[in-house]
Image 1 (cartoon, rainbow, N blue to C red):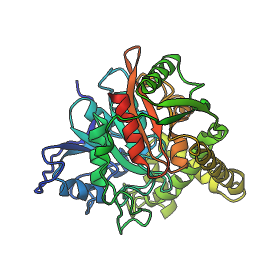
Image 2 (cartoon, helix red, strand yellow):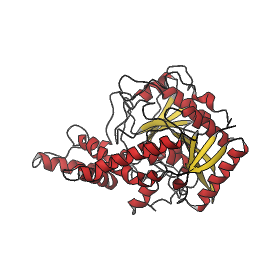
Image 3 (cartoon, helix red, strand yellow):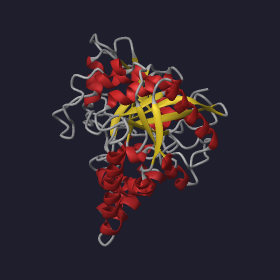
Image 4 (cartoon, helix red, strand yellow):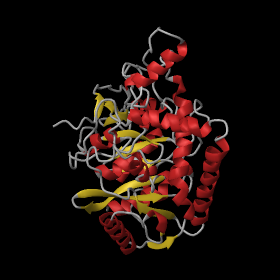
Length: 423
């Protein structure tokens, strides 16, 4: 039975010889590929073919990779299950009655099922780490600015990063080596990563490593998830690491702050999909406002409409200070809590997702359940930090992911710690 991991299956061979020669890569369908349809999982863009490659796609080709298709995703990256895609849901290869996570669910499912050796996803609030955890593979959300976003169709510019999904920590780190580094076409990129060798950090050596466990990110988790998490930490301790609990009270406000900021940025970014510049035409009857409304009514799914409406409301006159400004204050608080925690520890650890993979259809009627499932991942994006999800056991036969969070641009330490969990 098909997992529906791809929206477009088409092979793009590279003429170059490099570190990814012989490797097949699935590219999330919100990353521009020249001459290859890029839909963002939306009916709005079902016929859109970009005239250029994203920087990360250029780098894949330069490294000798073979692209095998565009991976299914939640529409415009808005979802935690890959069920909001206009092209149908992706199934979890571990258990086809369950979701693969989202929004990069197609990328993670393709890797977990062996339909691609490696994959690229994008992570705005957990969209690489969530499906990596649910599908039992490795996913890295890089530090904001480590990887170019040129050619990524924007959802929330201040939060999102492109990153790798792979079967092992070393392979994920090797793919990050290929895509990391500055890009003159993206003013948010940094020089860090220009000559990286993250793959060599996957040594599994955690002797003397100090790990902080934010109690707020563990307390509400499913019992089976907590058991797998603590067992993984005990294993790290046996390998020479030490861990202790820390408190980060700000993270309890993170989900609310995240969704106000992300939805506000989405309402602005998605204004371009009006049927004139981009997207389906709304026809020529009536005035332009009618045509604009028809294009967006037909082109966007329910979750995207919900987020645009909420974001527009949060930015509207009279409500900006009440919601958006307060969310930015909460974001600053989250950053301060992380900075304080890293004064005493090398990395922070939590379950990646507080629950096992949902059953297909389970969360569609309850958006709040879906939003709350992001509680452990969104603080990382608010603080622009790096994080990795690595398989850490099972609960009732379903994968559990361990999330390791590092200081800004310290990908090496989280890769080293994650490789010890893997070993």
